[in-house]
Length: 133
Image 1 (cartoon, one colour):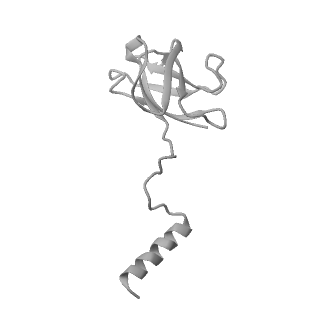
Image 2: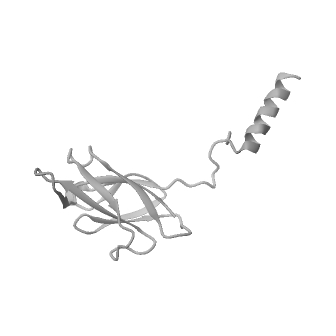
Image 3: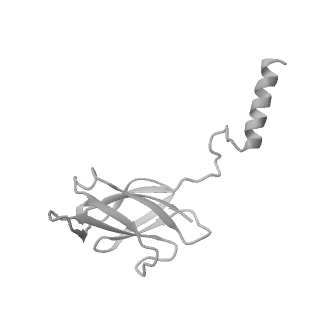
């Protein structure tokens, strides 16, 4: 068996086994956004992929809209960004029952830790979100 034949068999096996060898196709979409809270000014995307808008609707409450359409109500994986938050530790939480955001938007609530270790709503906590639905 030639080297080419062996390589062809390995590629065929991997393809049947569901292991992708090719790069992401142009039809695939990554949806993500790094939201800069901007210290209380209007929030903006520091970087994003397939996101349309981010808006603050209330103290520590944000609505994110993807530019792709989801089949279901969107949810998101979230994490905070310490650097963009000016070194303030905080948390970002998904709120699936928000009445402040449209059903097609992801609702996020941000809190910062006080000196006493308590949490309070905050416009100063920046975060990353990966919506899906």
